[in-house]
Image (cartoon, rainbow, N blue to C red; front, side):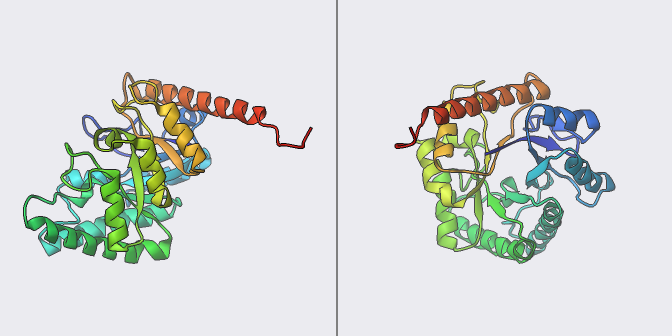
Length: 283
């Protein structure tokens, strides 16, 4: 499993779960020093020269890109399930730009809050039809570029649909669309009863994981048994990123350091366990 940290290419908003801002030398050197091998990117405008230059800086420091996250588009009021066809078209165009940007870094694009809100009553069925239609348009862009689109279940306090891992899994299976999952332990802790079982059931579709504690801080800073979840993912042979998409508390650097400490302890524990195993007949 690879480890990564969330980084924003723009100033962001209060409560944004990004540990780092910008791609200056000191920032990228620290991320690497802590042992992270990649980043998730909050992106505003992929066409800005400084954002395109950021990809080169990341490559220079040996940092990959896990997910490109278009959360700002949701903040700007864009929605893939919008009732207005012109607004849906514009949302698809903007995310299409994110897909092209992600393709330059072999990354993925997450589909979370930018899905919009389903509302209540009979209108929900129509919302999901519109949403599926937008996904189909995005797949026309992403599939030729080999950029996975990853659906993120988001808790009920931030979204009114696809809140749990099982709901998102059910949507993918019933729609038949070639989408994948990005699971987030912060949201899972609110919505899912058994996180380890959810990881097992969602394993065939899971491409990316936001791995944070119950309070959206580094593993070990909350009350979840993150070591158990880590071992579950090891047993499932999960090989993608575990990303620290966490709140920068007490600071971004300190939270990243605590995350690195946790990951280091788990890797050491795994090594010790492997050394204790001696295949039958080898002695």
